[in-house]
Image (tube, rainbow, N blue to C red; front, side):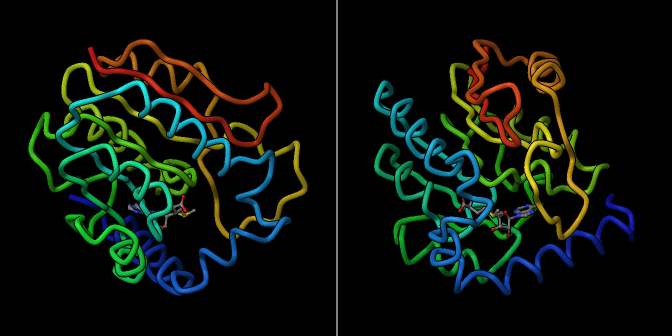
Length: 211
Ligand SMILES: C[S@@+](CC[C@H](N)C(=O)[O-])C[C@H]1O[C@@H](n2cnc3c(N)ncnc32)[C@H](O)[C@@H]1O
């Protein structure tokens, strides 16, 4: 059970993100938006397309913290069933417009309402794991490992450093080294880990497959 403090943090995140839903697509077009630091969001999208191109016959995929559905739309083209998960109903409403065939899950990435081994691909852009209350970080990895089938692909990004860019933060963020991420994923049965991003990058992308 989530503690009261954790619940409060999640509900304030939900409210904060909900208030940004209608403007998010415009917001991230601004050159000085953090989405464009190190060309991060575009790099993710390019990587997602490149990785998905190599896969076929995919049953199901999920976008964790899907926001307005930019990355979901790309994934939806490759899978029969597409799940969009986000804390914010406002974000999900926007995402549903981009991916009408989607199944909506209004939930936290730390508690995914799907059965074990139910998706072939899980993606998450926008350093969602770095936004989580600290005590839910482990659950992010555990839940991904639980819902992804053997042979399935995960792709997500995380904050690696905060000292190399001049950046004002609205809240505390979880920062991870590549080694930490590697350990967390290996521990849960992922292999073939790859990272995208320079050593000093604020945000790094990682992809891996489940054994
Ligand atoms: C930085 S935005 C990224 C949105 C989208 N993935 C994109 O790439 O444009 C973070 C998103 O994660 C969602 N989010 C934050 N914490 C979450 C949590 N614990 N569980 C599910 N979604 C969460 C927010 O509502 C928001 O839509």
